[in-house]
Length: 245
Length: 360
Ligand SMILES: Nc1ncnc2c1ncn2[C@@H]1O[C@H](COP(=O)(O)OP(=O)(O)OP(=O)(O)O)[C@@H](O)[C@H]1O
Ligand SMILES: [Mg+2]
Image 1: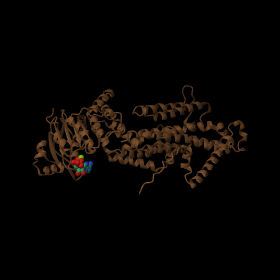
Image 2: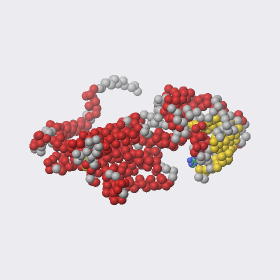
Image 3: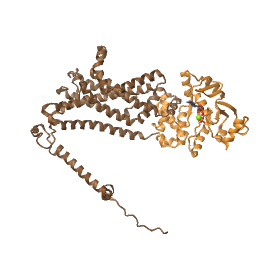
């Protein structure tokens, strides 16, 4: 098994003239929960989307569970098999029921039988407490429920790594905690997790490591206590003050 | 100021009240309602008298045609076979009927969601259209050979329409994806192809398929004239339908494909399970519209020598024998078109309600 679950080495990425990632070097250990914070446009989404190849990077190296993420389609597929992702806007398939949303990727992607896939899907839907909505369509459930379904959909594929890109930013305040609760349960297992979030209370409770990104670069990283109470970098101090107020 | 206590409103209900509210609420409303009522009664009674009460129904009474004040439906009784089957040999009409039913059954079954899988639909179409062609052509099992020049009437119309739709739709899907390709060569070529086929009049394309292609292609590649015309028609249809599908694909948020990719769904599944159903749902009204236009446009094939239902109707009127009864014949043709087009739009409306459940 590879030493680190994920390791970025001097990763750079450009959108035209815009330098979106600057020499990002970062290791995430197996079972670790990493929280990424930073102001809007700092490259958090870009970084997390590189992990499962949704974005290509320009130079540097990125390895996930021993596979190098790059142009090689087979390596990319091997990575995507082990990495799940939850988006800010849920991205449930609107024309499929909640259950079918969770079953279809199993049947198509890892060739599970429909019976087995249904069983696993129902198990995961129960785990995130939306099993009673299994036969509804996405537009018939609330935002918090949608995001939990999206989580169950990813978990049905037994990933080793989960990526969360601002999973609660599109939710009404009263629904945020129901999603954070199931995520918190997830962090207690041996899942490796990267989460972009502005929920500082949550970050403090679950993170093993916190990084702050500004303008495409990591300006400070450390354990949550240190980052939230005695940040070293002046930018971090300002940011923590801003999100605390 | 003390508010005045009003008496409770009198409960008003019943048909009388409903009529009063909707048709006679003001003086002007009342007059207009009466005028339109009189107009409706007059039209209905005139149609009734002409079309049913004074109508002549059977060929035995045909001498009365043209003298009385009624329609002469005897022409339909006498010539319905010509309208329905065109020049198809009389003794073999049963084959044309069966073939036609096979294609109609195929189209109806294609409308049932149960058949909407990657395998079921092509197999259904292959069986349905295979049955049609084998029955119509014959030349085996004691059925005399009937070449496509003799096919005609309503069966030909239905066959051309369904074949164009069934060939054109997958082609349109391919063109739509090709036009969105990230390879500029493919995207540009497809765009050019679509623009050319859309800018040519259908008549030109059908003429080229019927007359020009045989001059250019070697014998063994030419196939049948009807086949060529259907392919030309299908290309024309596909060029329009491709743009409709492309619009449907564009309206799907990027997140849908990103989710499918990160769930490791294979490319074909992203297309068939995620993109196409949503694109199709988003463009249902325009697709039904395109189908209706195509059904009506089938009558153009008359000009290149095919005897479809419209041409058959003209032939009935063209004979001196029934030359006076053109109103009846065209009404009958209009009725046939109406049944099909109305069926299509009702089906579209049904699909739309069905698909509204689960809109994201
Ligand atoms: N597809 C793209 N094309 C061009 N520029 C892009 C693209 N995606 C992102 N960018 C730019 O790259 C920068 C980083 O974007 P990114 O989405 O990673 O930021 P973020 O930290 O996730 O911000 P937010 O908190 O708003 O989600 C931004 O300046 C953004 O404008
Ligand atoms: Mg972002």
